[in-house]
Amino acid sequence: MITRNELIKKYLEFFKSKKHKVVPSASLIPEGDPTTLFISAGMQPLIPYLLGQKHPLGKRIANMQKCIRTVDIDEVGDTTHHTFFEMLGNWSLGDYWKKEAIEWSFEFLTKELKIPAERIAVSVFLGDENAQKDIEAAKAWLSLGIPKSRIAYLGKKENWWGPAGVTGPCGPDTEMFYWKNNSKPAPKKFNSKDDNWVEIWNDVLMQYTKDKTGNYAEALQKNIDTGMGVERTVAVLNGLEDNYLSGMWKPIIEKIEKLSGKSYKGNEKAMRIIADHIKAPVFIISDGVVPSNTERGYVLRRLIRRAVRYGKNLGMQNFTKDVAESVFEIYERDYSELKRNKEKILNELEKEETRFLKTLEKGMKIFEKRNVRIKMKRPFRLHLNILNPSKKNKDLIKDENQDITESESYVSGKDAFLLYQSYGFPIEITIELAKERGMNVDTKEFEEELKKHQELSRTATKGKFRAGLADGSEQTTKYHTATHLLHKALKKVLGEEVRQMGSNITPERLRFDFNFPRKLTSEEIKKIENLVNSQIKRKLPVDFVEMPYTQAVKTGALSYFKERYPKVVKVYSVGDFSKEICTGPHVKNTSEMGKFRITKEESSSAGVRRIKAELLDETK
Image (cartoon, rainbow, N blue to C red; front, side, top):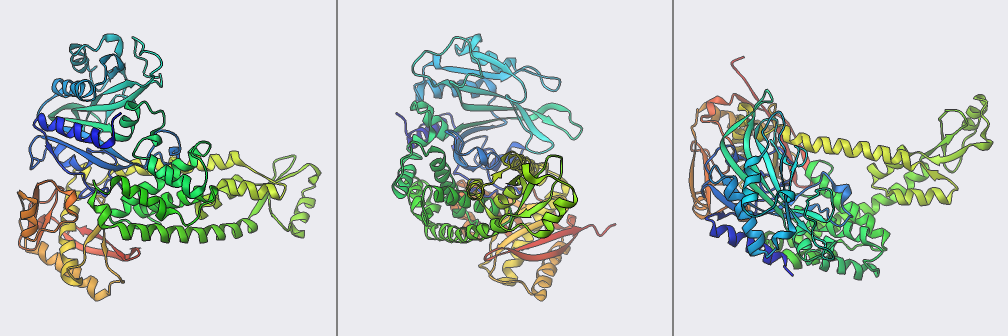
């Protein structure tokens, strides 16, 4: 048996022995990188260094990164999908290459985790018109004793990473698989489609750079980026077919069993969703997000409400705080931000649960008023009230000369989806209510509407990677520097208690969220705008120095939670005006930025305001 803590400790100690510096987990909220809502992979906080910036701690880095992934949120409920997860990783920033990365991966698996080599198989990149077949990686595996029959050559869909944006570093990867079946030995030939082979580690070999024309060239700085999911690895190494039976989940499941009076067996899907959708919000709230109807806040709200819906199905109410207590028991020692923000986390969960239960009541009333679709012998659609069809409706039918004796009344899939999406109304409740009235629900149409919504969500999530700092453009660099000036200006005008709560940058504008209890006056907005522009006109140099984190704080550099930073950090100064710990790209002088203009000031969520601004090119 291996526990979560044992796996993490073994991994980090192993790479320390290989001269890697261990950095702490970054916040779930991307800092200096607005290209995604949440950190969903260990490499995201390291993008500036993968692009060529020098890391303060050197070229070999390792860590355990907390992550949130919401693209496949609707898959949660099976044995393996999780919204919150922990990712182990080691990086070479232009230092060691494929041979060393693969050798150390094999050494860790076989020597530290004691996995027999006969239970290991690997995949490498097959090659295509853009990049060559990865013979180099295959040779490294062969030299370690992995037979040819256990090496699969797969295409870009399976064995390629990146780039994060439209352009940038990318390359083939090599994945490691573990034979999880204990009842029979692993076959000599590796079949990647056999579910008994479980991927537990991935070495990304950033060998190429993709340019704006779509061409791939050998990268000037070749990087190694690896990822090992803690939850999955612990489960498979302990012979568990269900991740939720491991120590990272079992206390939460047991609390749900106790509160509901029901057994996990027979209620697996509901209990997995509740456990997952309470754990993730605990971490999201601890990093400063609160429920809202936009972006991160919307994701948080959706998670909590989905948990409440499934809890209600199990007969639970006012339970989110109690389930969250189990999350603290598991993680509080490793994440001090949880302990520090515990009261706030529990309060936000309770408030959102109460708010949603009221919303469910509204949904019930809306259901009673929604129309149903009448299905006729020939294609014809009109809406009738569920409980009291009007004379006008009947006259319409008569006028169309329709025979209603064989018609079937049913709730349309679109109406069911409206209730689901706008009111958080479970499809199961819609079906039950319709059944009581002798009607069916068009579940096929509902599934079609849901699928369309999911595709839009996935597209939107992927689109987050198509702009912002990852594209490295001149304009986004200007906007990022502008956020430093804006942050400091807000503090000077509104008070030192103001701090950044989030940001988003595109080549067209910046958006900046900050804590403040009220709407800004027009005078305050003008003062902030003028203060930023005055610093731009001063033509201030923008420089950085590397120093220990503790020293940076003493010098007055703006920072957030100490858990986000390694021991040595970069401190960017904009002349004598602004000083901030940061890793993003910056202009060399404020004179490059143009005129700063605030276009909108509004509420983002409770206690959080939002400013939208643009930079105007005064030379045009």
